[in-house]
Amino acid sequence: GGPFVTYTFYDRSTDRVYMLDGSVFAPDYDKLDLLRQMEVMARTFRTAEEARSAEDRPVASE
Image (tube, rainbow, N blue to C red):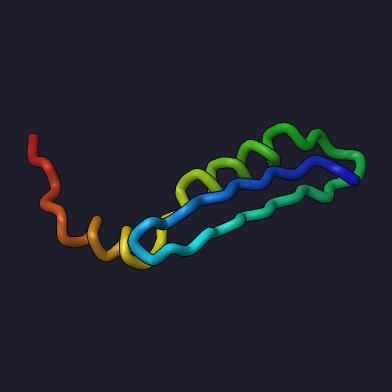
């Protein structure tokens, strides 16, 4: 038991499914902030192809 998050992503270009599981084990501590950190890590997941593509994009200048 305990708090956890699971995110599933489908990558059409490679026909792969990615599942990211994160759990928090912190007895006697408030777990909400820790669980939110796990969610941020899962939501920022990128495949290798997406990461390479992002490197090729120009950065917007102000």
